[in-house]
Image (tube, rainbow over all chains, first blue to last red):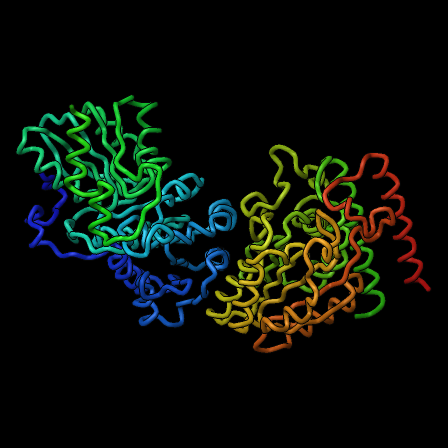
Length: 328
Length: 284
């Protein structure tokens, strides 16, 4: 059942009762709030102000908005300089280009330099939709989490994205936040707790055989899957692991020890992503049978977000199918 | 500047060169030609031009110096040591385990190093970021960015040049160490850079060409750069790689190797002789 301590939406299984919003929208709101709280907060954007929601900040604080043009390498170098000087720059583009194109600038001028740049990767995952494989970043968790000093966060919904944005604005560390284009159900509320590095078990069963560790839009789909599987007598618990780095090894280990099998679920390549990060922890602390829901070493393609999410197994039905196949 | 002051700075440059030879021989690896070629400008930057305080490295009123061509850092370490940032003996720890003097500079390793550098092409962007922040806050500090000429092959440099030109960052001065060599040979053979003046001008910069070993010219160029409003300035400093040691001058093979012990002794002798010549010129 739903963990009531988390104060999720009271009618969480009723899709009609939930608002739909993209995590980029929650980020956009959070950025304006962060800008109101601290005048050091700045927005830097590489010619994608509307789709990254940077334009909301730009309208409110035009003097603190910096346009870079289509120049993602320079986006990161300039952000590094601003952070070094004492500002709190949020550097925005699509995840395919940042951290995609400018990874070396992120490595040397931000992470190794250890300056508090906030890297905002929008349009991650296949849910980008019709733009196709070139624009569907599926490698960004791997390429950011491998960097020492870097914080990596994948918010589960728009409200969590807002809170994560406020949290990284004050953490004084290089940070990456991964956002999606598509609207998804907003199942957390303003009262739901959020702290960097603290995962939450959002759905608990009494004697779970399977534990799902999910991030991004897969968290809500996992909750729906768990509720449906319960009706069939299959007990599943679900953890929202929105902070992938630093990993809360203790809580992930305890969660794994409460089940027989861990399924990780993310809209990312299975190699190097959140599932791999969990496996790195469990193989040392609590070896557990694992299986991975993610992109199976291939690129995405054009289609509607719903079509693609269904096709690649990133929905309730895909999760249920995966779990049944693991149990059989 | 008076002749006496110029001579003083030339002697500082000579001291910096001697330290470079000393530390590179001891390190057993590193870049020799570039740092020797930039020694005159570094003497001028640290002993004449920049507002800085070795005892208060994060002084809020300081000028910022980015070294985009991070592999030439021995010249910065040597200038910093002679300016009093740390003991001159510490130069001999260059590139050694546990040293604050990393092979390529690290922001957190040594106070006074403004940024981690080495991967080419990214220093100018960082300098434009600081210049943007300073302007937003209405501060008067100046930002300098030293770049190599080989690294002008990097696309990121021109993204940064376009950004600084577009925004008219007059508090930013780029200094190109135009020594015509890079690892694979002469710059114009590896990848043509000329017309360099035309390139920077067309990106919206004020451009000044100087002899990078003429300290008076360099100091004057920086004064002019500070006086130019609404535009960043690029000083193209023509230098001789390895300047001061005949055997190294203009030899691209010396880009990335240190002197042997035998060479060190000869080179130091040559620099001591040069010191005598500088003093002799002064006393005339």
